[in-house]
Amino acid sequence: MHDNDSTRQPVWRQALAGSQMLLVAFGALVLMPLITGLDPNVALFTAGAGTLLFQLVTSRQVPVFLASSFAFIAPIIAAKQQFGLAATMGSLMAAGLFYIALAGAVRARGSGFINRYLPPVVIAPVIMVIGLGLAPTAVHMAMGQSGDGADQLVPYADAMVISMTSLVVTIVVAVLGRGLLRLIPILFGVVAGYVLSFFYGVVDTTTIAEAQWLTVPAFTAPAFDWRAIAFMLPVAIAPAIEHIGDVLAIGTVTGRDYIQRPGLHRTLLGDGLATSAAAALGGPPNTTYSEVTGAVMLTRNFDPRVMTWAAAFAVALAFIGKFGAVLQSIPVPVMGGILCLLFGSIAVVGLNTLIRHQVDLSVARNLVIVGVTLVFGIGGMAFGRGEVALEGIALCSVVAVALNIVLPSAQRWREHAHY
Image (cartoon, rainbow, N blue to C red):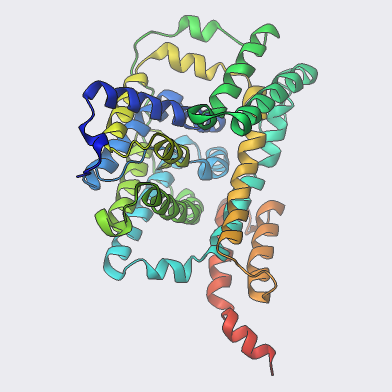
């Protein structure tokens, strides 16, 4: 276990630090199910249970918190419309099983093959598509419309004041905030927008009044449809790579090599089990949270037991019915304003991946992979029609991986150019 002084802190301090970590994760944790139409109480439960599962698999060695993955927002919305909620949950269970298979491959062959088949030039444009592909949803919601822009839910003028206030507050706290404040800008943005929404009379409080104080989260069972699974599996590639990046990041913060111990195969297995377990109960897929890693870095609190407390608090909150009702009453423009920043941030993560790994876009193969992936993803390219169509992030992932395998390496490309 850790020999850091933080492991010897009293239980009450561990609990306090755990509640602080949950607060940092909270905004993104509940925002994702609210956007996709899943139950935030179920998401809280599955985030807590998933983190505990992860700790069990990794022998409680890695101080990370697992919660709702933003990479799956667009695929969940699309899959729910096409296949229904139960089949979507079944496909997300399959995505978790993909992580588990990947963990087995890493254990058998080492992590080198991941870099060969899924290098930054493949992953970066897919991450950019995840963010930019969702841009219209954020803008529609900010203008008071439903995610697809079909219905005007809040009058445009009111919606713009609410959404832009939420956005500005989030930006101000993110940029000018100090210490822990800087890690919870989403929370500030939501609160500011929610309070303003009350003044505009767009908050429906009837569901809050009717909700029970204590209630069991609305768990739902999955169903399995091969079409939904085939649609969702390619999407799982990008978050799997994101997971590796997060494990490296927390290792840099704590000064430990988690790729070696407990091992990348163990952390991937933990993530996979957490995602499959969440989907089995009707919750969103889980991923390691970068904002919590930021909080660990800021507080220098490297004790994984702190995350056990954060997980326990998340599970406990899941059973407070009124709390879930308050979350579900957050008006669309509040979320829309914050999403304008969040979805843009996801795209920037992809851009930063290209820059950090010094991917040379003047090399034709790199330009081809990034260019085609971006246009297919953002433009809405679909291969096939109807139920067997491959489109969106799933298509992007497949195309990016295929191009990387088929196109000659940069070295061979240069040699060929000399003839």
